[in-house]
Length: 97
Image (cartoon, rainbow, N blue to C red):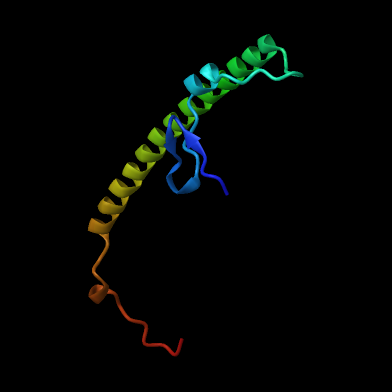
């Protein structure tokens, strides 16, 4: 398999990095004999870049929310752990089961 490059650098371990909206908007394509309408290509690139920017923002907001929930859970666990009795204080069931 040929090594794929992006920005003059090979992808780490052969995997592409995340595309940025700027990369999508500014990507140039080589003209071919039976090429496509450049205006349509630019319009599509703009739509894809806008969608990518929106998704990146959603990921950023969800990451922040995830961090907030993790901190709240950690705080709750810490508070709950202080209220719990140590295992040696539990009354052991002397029954068969």
